[in-house]
Image 1 (cartoon, rainbow, N blue to C red):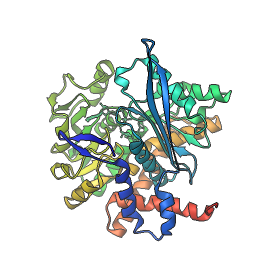
Image 2 (cartoon, rainbow, N blue to C red; image 1 turned 135 degrees about the horizontal axis):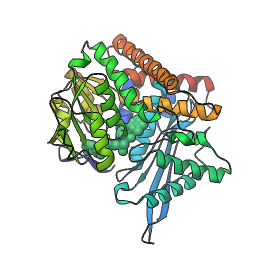
Image 3 (cartoon, rainbow, N blue to C red; image 1 turned 180 degrees about the vertical axis):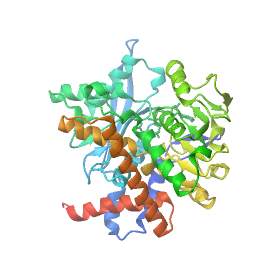
Length: 425
Ligand code: NAD
């Protein structure tokens, strides 16, 4: 178990995969599923670690470690992003893969769960080095990937360009162009309209439903957003479109505060040029870590996991936590938040808009027929609102919080398929 994750300047040992298992166990005991099957559902089906030699720009070779985990392929091909980050390790990738299994089941799309990553610091690497690293990773794990077996997508520090290199490398080895092996691609090479915005759009659709459930008028609500990458910036943009005042945002370099609301579109333009939010003229500087404790209605953690723990959960003032990130709240923190009446929209529901439109992208690639942005958004809206309503119903009927309800629904859906398929032995 790695010593990592800094919260309020305290270093705490956290196994993210243990957190997922705790979440699983809490839900599993409430379901009537054969306990021996539970073990099968809980642990990753396949975890692969590869060593990746990459030629750096100065002519030397550097070794990187890459991971791909298929947590479950019971309901369909493994689906899940690829992360580039110094903290990537097997524990984290296994956790993220497991969350993908439950997320795809929550929104009822025909995929299992997977995740990949490379331990690297992309901020210290050139574009050419990142390209060679991506291609070497794709080639090393070629046998795992495929439109019917395992379909990656972007995650932290990977983007459309990374997906394009992946698709090209996979296609060179396959000897023909395979668009449906990866999602989150650039539009011109088979990407879907609405994919880049999909995770943030889903975060805000579920937040809107939570506001409605709690009888809070969006026009009177305020929000704080941690992380200003794909998920954080787009969530902030859609919150503003919903008339919510976004008063606090942060990225890894610093935080911003404006009590009158930050102009998110202007900030997005600023970040395009400066690559960070620090120095934006439309807001005051604010402590990056403190934005979690801002006196707002909605908190959107959209950076990394294990941000809200038993050490700081009591300091959260928001009424709603919309989990844009995967695993931002630990199981111990969940209990404290529940006691304090905070409504948590769990990651496996809240940020499922991304994988939902990834599914649409895969469908379009396989059909060779592309949908309009309206088609995509109407379908996304329906899937996210239906999923929110279904999870809320289970939560209210069983008097449990939303995460437990989401896990109960998801595990039952996967277990039902296992029971029907039977165990091949
Ligand atoms: P990204 O790389 O685009 O952005 C990450 C952001 O977090 C950056 O702005 C970075 O500066 C910031 N950050 C990192 N550490 C921070 C800290 N300690 N405090 C404040 N900000 C910090 O990544 P992303 O794709 O937006 O992913 C963010 C989260 O959302 C991850 O947990 C990811 O797994 C999850 N997620 C992403 C998608 C997707 O479609 N991209 C889908 C579902 C879930």
